[in-house]
Image 1 (cartoon, helix red, strand yellow):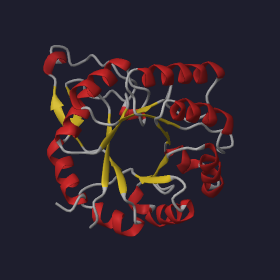
Image 2 (image 1 turned 90 degrees about the horizontal axis):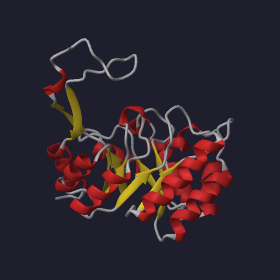
Image 3 (image 1 turned 135 degrees about the horizontal axis):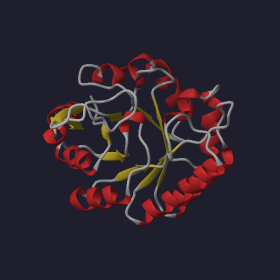
Length: 251
């Protein structure tokens, strides 16, 4: 297996530190991974950058539930993007769609130009997985100068979308990077790489840690109606990611 670049999806500064200790090449920093990742705080970016020096791609996503935003939400995206870049982000991760699911060219152009003018990467996230025509979407992103696209091959799990990812890589022909992700595990790693021909992957492997500070009153929940348990939280599984990194790099 050729050496493969490994990007880890992180939800906190601690996640970034664990991913760094595991030997990854790059991270995508978010908040609220439960909802697919939202814009991280500047504080988490600054601490993660200070403590690791890793290339950090920062999500720019103002809310969960789709990718067609109001004018106020997009204004927030612009302000967040500027602030993240000013505080050390090595790239912006975003996705803007019209109500029909096609790429919002104008909003994508604005975020791409912000990133590229700062000498940083512009990454279009898995919004690509719900567009009606991924070839048309890639043509737009290539034209606008987007660096990279994160995709599961328009499948719920990239293991089911490897054929489409391979087609995307062939269609891109080096004009834009294709980054497969969503559901890659140590068990599926070799198959995903073999079937896609990708030279980089996006992974998220977490373990659960306890936080007993809420156990005095188990009737209290601070989340939504799903009521997630309040006595635990997740963090990147350094050992599992480290093993995956070693295998991806043929060590």
